[in-house]
Image 1 (cartoon, rainbow, N blue to C red):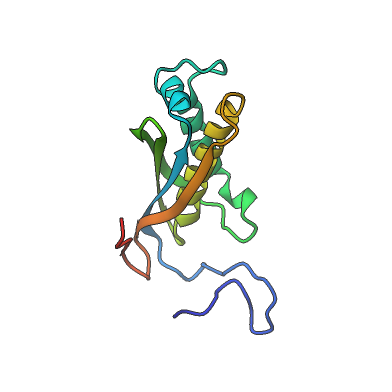
Image 2 (cartoon, rainbow, N blue to C red; image 1 turned 135 degrees about the horizontal axis):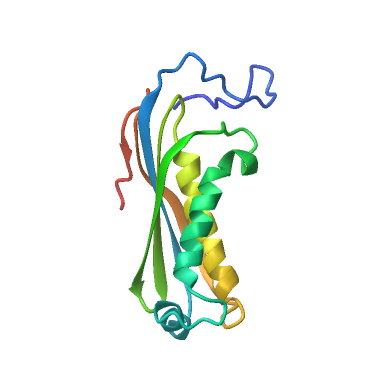
Amino acid sequence: MAELSHFDASGASRMVDVGAKAVTARQARASARVRMLAETGRLVRDRKMAKGDVLEVARLAGIQAAKRTWELIPLCHPLPLDGVDLRLEFENDEVLAIEATARATARTGVEMEALTAASVAALAVYDMCKAVDRGITIERIRLEEKSGGKSGHFTRNDA
């Protein structure tokens, strides 16, 4: 197992110096699930929530969050993102699956940007639906795949 890179030899926090790393094409895909009452899911799917189109607001929230990840996560580098995509699809009336993909040509990976996009998209769904369903659960936020950089390609095996 690799050492934790965000701590120096004395245990102090540090931002990793990526200056000597090669600029490569990097991509990461993360996911989250939002579990809700079936009635809530139908309202979202039919675009009948009083606050508006939940899925489009969540998509925009995820994209915006990916662009600001470095402001939210203390030791992340600001990255020039090449693109961010969010896919929101109902598995059934009760479960909304969110998948976020972030791409950059940079010296460090975009895993945190993809994870942040999926997380904030899920939070936006909760915010827009909480008036009708306070029991919404956000679950299984995780990295599904990443490519590029020194550590190579990772794909989750239990997907």
